Length: 319
Image (tube, rainbow, N blue to C red; front, side):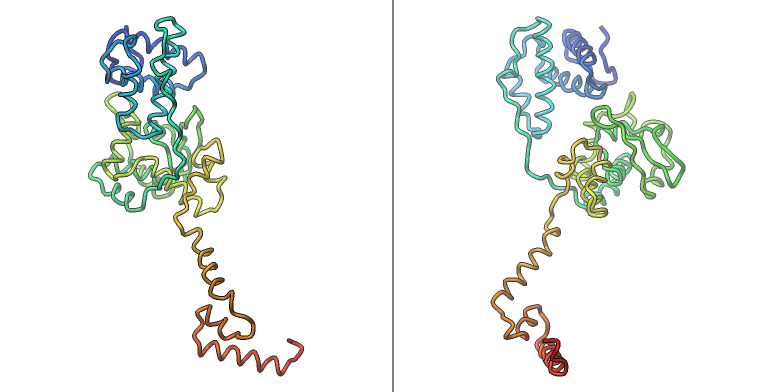
């Protein structure tokens, strides 16, 4: 039996191929997007290869070992969802009786705010000797695309004329969006050959390859560059709605998580607090002291107070 997604490594056995193909057909009927189906196929196929067992012989201990292999919480959540769906389908198909992930809870979503990549990481990536990495980091920095979206970028998705081009991005959940290119990125991509931005042996590279390139070149994940783009765009515009559209978020709440507070946003407030604490016990009886609290030099403070007193004597109506 020929496997689906032949450009990926083959599953562990023919039995895995049969189960995976049937499951993917079910996902398609249920309305899952082609990218979700391919991504979940890739995840479960890798699971099978890692355990080197028939799909019917996988048990809970296999799933625990696989999920605890040292990946991020978001990856664990994605892996759990794919494998759980796969074995739910196997139960409905009467191939097995128990889902090996049934007693393994879904890991909680991380609520802590993630750091955006610093400008130093961008500079480092743009100095990479690998032109693919330079292209990738420039794309991340100027468009904020996800790694999956970057893998799917193709020259046929350019819109407009040189200097004013935009890129049609195939987004999450089968939703497309148009992202205008900065002039610098437009020039950077002008000489690119027709085809995928990041070609693989067959078709485009896998998003995991995009991840590996980025981390090895900069020390930061692709999503950290996406957060940097979102934060920079918010600081430039002050409009969270525009950031939402540029990032392709369905929920405004998701976009707000990208508005990372580095401390600069509250610096004025902290400064005002310090001024208040210096001034709260200074009354109108000592206006010179009040001026000095605002860091006005003592001689100038005395001059200002004396000038005001003279003016009030000449114009009592000011009292």
